[in-house]
Image (tube, rainbow, N blue to C red; front, side, top):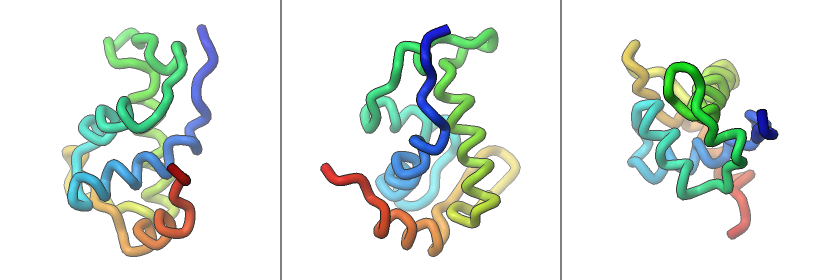
Length: 98
């Protein structure tokens, strides 16, 4: 398998994608928004047995870590998440330079 992007590298783009979506979105939509925001490796784009590319799983795991760090909040059990006040502050302090 080709090299995968480290999960932590998804953190700022996830927060940016949430912010771009008005602060709330579902996990798969967040992942799809990252396709245009990040340079994904060939390994990230390779499909898993479930048919989804590897980066979708990485985004899901990072969202879980971000919930533990209180950067996002789970809205419902169907994958809807919201950026928290702490997440908004984190994003403004750590936003990537364009």
